[in-house]
Length: 451
Image 1 (cartoon, rainbow, N blue to C red):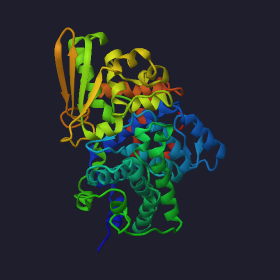
Image 2 (image 1 turned 180 degrees about the vertical axis):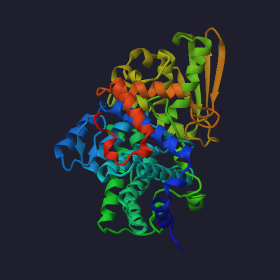
Image 3 (image 1 turned 90 degrees about the horizontal axis):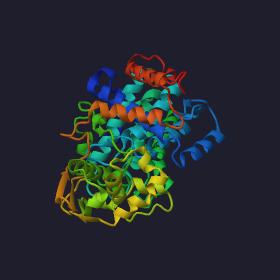
């Protein structure tokens, strides 16, 4: 009987470009642009310059572009730092209905190998779609509740390895070994979410690097166990119980790379519905912070686990702000926004925002199984009495489309507000190249004269 790993490997290698629907290719381009933008904005985030310096010091082959900093590094090193900068400010896209960040793990690996191999744009786009499809399927097949593994770190390596294997021209059997090697490197824990530290920014990067290394090792004949998903000591047995039938349902007929939404706030996705609810009430009633006497936020158990802890910006202030619901609500109340400026250390330690956090009480609705919603926000106010707002899910989910102008505003800000900004001409050129990816003969051209 064909193993699940073999089926995924065959899917990654044998699916022709022509079989991928146009909307899935368009989504890949859009989320690629979004991921590059947040990587530019995250390049100066604490921990990223230090990591880049270490990798640059180690040096090696000039395989692939280091996105924001410029220069080139070996494919595995480029994938690692590019993934880290893209994940650093919690602004990258997130899976719909599941807590996985597909593009921040798969894109850096795929693009590094595409440059290294001088792959065509068609091969690259197909690899990106298929790698993200596989990663999302893994996350969607996982049983509830999450045991504590960080889905992107634990599952992203599978998709990254599949994408890299395709561009390396590996056989199905070699790709199966690449997936197995990725599993042997899978790890990542949500402990890094609930105890904020700079290592949180590396979780996707470990998966991206594992994907590159696994495919390159398989190319050289390194083998791995064939049943790493459903085996006795495979992924489902050791990491997270899952539904294999769901993982492979309509494989090759439906491509789940489109099951991701663009973030509108540089913060953990678990905070977004509460931020939306706060801003809706603030704008609807023109609330001033002192008008608010108390705030009750009714949230899901998953949200409480990841962002419901005490707020302590004394250490890594930026990470603390990104992973705390009380800060998110208080910041939206006081500043009427939560953007790049609001996650800087000065804002994270702002005494005025801190003064309103004591008004906030979190209440867990144990009947809810959502990862980012619903949230019910109940405010007691001086001038309007009790006011309530309920938000079901994040923007970009079903019934909550994101306006293209909001995406353009976000992407432009990320590229231009970076410490390593793109000029207007460079930004326009990047967008043109993005649209012409399918016509590119050699992906090493993509960043030419821009980075």
